[in-house]
Amino acid sequence: MQILIQLRWIAVLGQVATISVVHFGFGISLPLEYMLGVLGCLVAFNITSHLRIRIRREITNAEIFVALLIDVAMLTTQLYLSGGASNPFVFLYLLQVILAAVLLESWTTWTMVGITAACFAGLAMFGQPLALPLAHDQGLASPYLQGMLICFGLNAALLVSFITRISKNLRARDNRLADLRQRAAEEEHIVRMGLLASGAAHELGTPLATLAVILGDWGHMKAFTSDPELRQELDEMQAQVLRCKSIVSGILLSAGEARGEAPVETTVRNFLDDLVVEWRTTRPANTLLYDNRFGQDMRIVSDSALKQMICNVLDNALEASPRWVRIDATRDGQDLIIDVTDDGPGFPTEMLDRLGKPYQSSKGRPGSGLGLFLVVNVARTLGGSVAARNRPQGGAVVTLTLPLAAVALETEEDVDGD
Image (tube, rainbow, N blue to C red; front, side, top):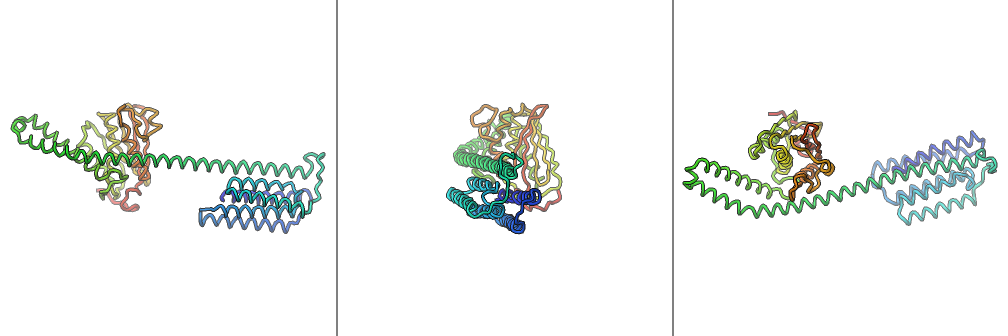
């Protein structure tokens, strides 16, 4: 409908120019008061159509059909007043038929063909020809041939413009549908992974509990209590078992959910500070540099999925660069920007092109590549994005962009930092 409105404005300007040239330039008498009245009706209808789509965006086939019928009626009236079927602009009927073929359903398209043919026949029967020199030996000096040339150019230009616009809209729709199908497939993949993770977590609960009991019994045995080195290793084993149990509990809490089921009220600074402290205590990271330049703090709601998303990126960076990892937090308008930088080998070019696709990894292990896949999908669910690039001096940077509105406790109200 928007395209029809644009074409109709072009038609109004074209008719004003044509009537002026024919009447005042060629000296051919035209019933100006009636033709300008028809133009006024066309302008009023176009304004009404514009207001209609501003009130409600959905347009039905019947509405487009009625709009094209009114265009045909206006064109027929103007042709009747300016020579009938002998008017060279009678071929503008073809434009109406082509528009109907592109925009309307099959039965309304054929109805439009019949209506335009009937209008053409009616003009031939009842129209009064204008006194135009039709001799072809005058070449382009003949007003009739000049009119046909202008009509041809107008038809061609409008058709190219219209078909190009429609083709662009169709390509955009196809791309959007392809993205939706891809997203649906990825979300189905995540659901399957969540089910598998939940099942694995239940299965791991029993052996982890058994290990915890055995390690507790070992802690009272003389062989371990009398040997400080063995006691230290036993304590480390118990800590790792507790960590495994905590991970399993987290999986059972949020498996299959884009956001966890245990949201916690906090602030951006506290959330990131606590996350970094927890990550440092549970990973064998020699060096983690942390720079929080978020600015004025604000209250948010955090959950396990949000925390795990950032931890996944840090884990990948640590695996690629065991000696140096850096995390920077900044604010860009209404977005939280988190940059995770490492000093590793960087991403292969083909991975940068397919970032976030499942099983895209340079590690060469079965099942690898799921970390970034989950990170991208969680960020997308929150309305954010994930980008990656290689640094010229080596290593890579993964940038998480998260809209604060998606996690804010109070979207507009910030609080002072502690």
